[in-house]
Image 1: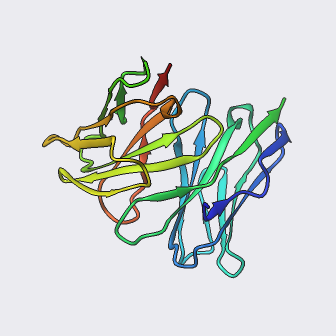
Image 2: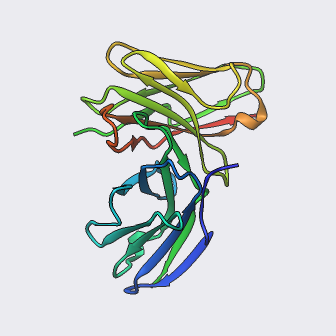
Length: 113
Length: 113
């Protein structure tokens, strides 16, 4: 089976609140993790990535946290907006030198206006 | 800068026919990846091309094949189409450097009837 999974398949959040999307991985050798956003009818859009030598990385309104002890990855979206409604995928790179990603099945984020 | 472009956007074929999907990577990107996204499922790795060579393939039968041209564009061919091949086929490109993000196109929606 897939080594990357998600705790919550769907998430509904009030506009303006913060969102947290979680992801578990099982491969201890993974050293690169990435979050994508996929809107209906479009391909996945890169959001943010993090390497295994980091615990936290921040972007514009988004933060990724990596807990290698429990093999957990999370994406935090601050002040969630209607445009954030999409399916979010986490993925891991299992092989050094390759960009062969293993994706989870995704979490659907719905923002309530 | 133009993103990854895929053509056609939609493709309808009958069982047993052959399908050809095309991808143009972002300028300067040398690696191309193909993923299959079946309805309700995550992204499954198909093929990886770099500098014109096939570097790796996922767990798909040999009737899934492709190539990369000298200008780094790529083609995915699916022979002897089966109903379960109906899916969104996504192409992604990267600079070919370790830990450089994959950038996806919007995909080709293949429907096999």
